[in-house]
Length: 56
Figure 1 (cartoon, rainbow, N blue to C red):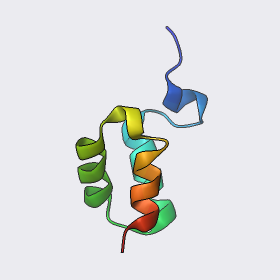
Figure 2: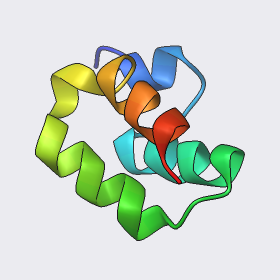
Figure 3: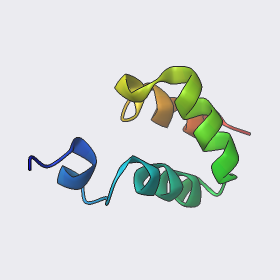
Figure 4: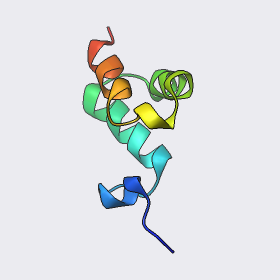
């Protein structure tokens, strides 16, 4: 089985990545999940990160 992009970056899966992103930026996981759904998987390492960094 081929490694996913998340595994290549050290996470178990997408959920693990999103939870880590929330923890790293001290924002609720539910908010990161909502942003991730709106933006889609293709933005996980770009647009989502920007949105989380701009979160307040």
